[in-house]
Image (tube, rainbow, N blue to C red; front, side):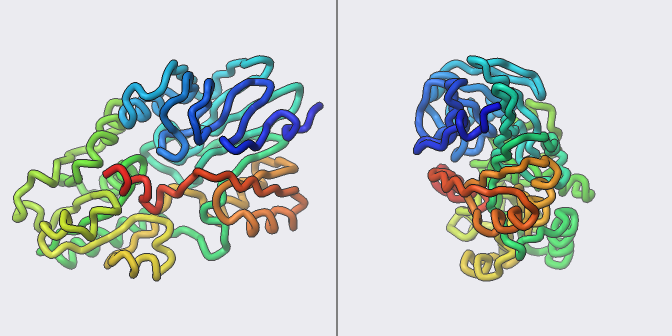
Length: 342
């Protein structure tokens, strides 16, 4: 039985399944790509053929139009064989349609998890552990200091602030794909049934979510709203817009930002955030380690993030670790890609 490192190669363009002839989340155009999810650092234009979940393909079309070739939708757990490699997708719990890519070749199995989180999210299918020989994991928040609070508690902090400052507008920075829709759903679950106002850059992704059956309630464009109508309102906007001229048109705004990085006070302060909300779409330190134990892989490959700490912790439990140091993958929690496209 060949070890996965003999057939799953780490190349400058990303992870390449050599016998299958396909790439996973390649950073440059390729003939055949398997895409874990539709964030712009994982789903790029120019591929001749893309295999992904139907939701990811719909989101990719909304983001980039016809900038990729043949689309092959694959339902959860539906196997497809490519040149002797059996491939299937399992939920990653990151955003709508986000998937783990499971591959079996000549008796060995590797799972590329993409980005993932382990807490329940009403806007996407929850993460499912897949037993494997090699597990490829992200490490965005792979330090012991990063233990995320319950998202419901952070939403309550937001609603408490709205109640405390009824004459101000609360503007919350959030990434357009995933974080925005999750915040809306969490607000609805917490009892906020009034309108939620959106910066124009967030509207198209919400429309795709609705088309995929995710109910978001009363959403309205903030740009066309009268200033007085936004008093006491909640406005969602790209992270790059919450402290610029766009936000200054709001009524004495309370500036909030929803991100796992809001655990770091200096980051909140440097961005002028008055109300930091620690809501992340990535697994925290405890969830990363629990996931490694659940999948039971004797070897873990760690991608973008804080590889060393996670590899050390895994090694103490007898799990071999390897830092892939892949380049070209950002952190959408920072809103970098959002700011570039807004």
